[in-house]
Length: 108
Image (cartoon, rainbow, N blue to C red; front, side, top):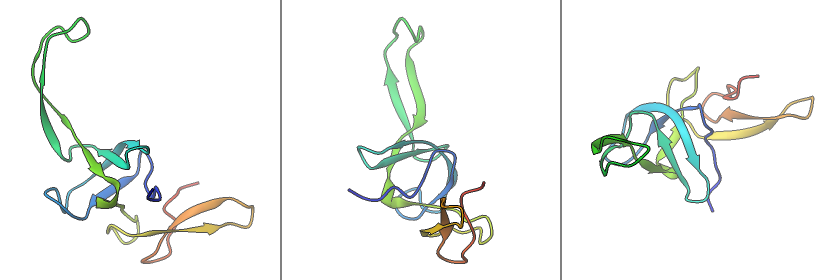
């Protein structure tokens, strides 16, 4: 299984595939499947039948899942998709850092 380098709420860039170059916020990480759902990226059309919950059916457009290997977090300093590393702070906490410039990706 691949290491999970993105978290919900991160801004990520798509580095390969049909959606290459697009950016968005991570809505959900599907850890068991190794996939991630990014806001306004990989939009798919779902043909939805009317149900009790969704009274009106029809064609619904929503985000599809992307492979985890196809996205990288965007560094706030570089403003580019960057690989991440882990650094231990003096107080024992671990934070993710940008491999490109060394800036902390985790805030706090």
